[in-house]
Image 1 (cartoon, rainbow, N blue to C red):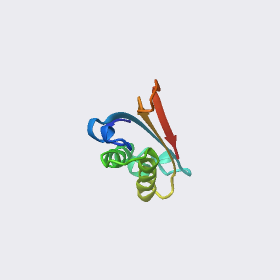
Image 2: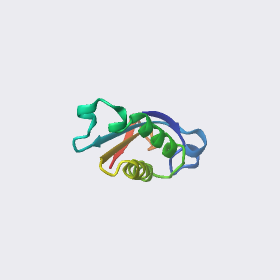
Image 3: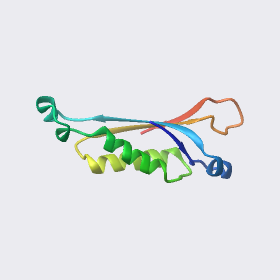
Length: 105
């Protein structure tokens, strides 16, 4: 998932924003959809996207905080899922050429 968001410790990051890539992986026990082929019997990734978008719209200092909020929101919606979140920030302001900085939880 790709977002323009306003996360960062520096004031400049909160004003101009940055590009972020978010990956959410869910591990589930076998779900009924394996047999039924019905969306209602599994996790709807459109709903996952909506949760992630909502959390990305809330500015935070640290990517770890954003990733934790995303993981919590997804786990609350689907407690049976093991949730893995990765967030990558493009061109972080670190004083040198860095394409991406990333956190995973």
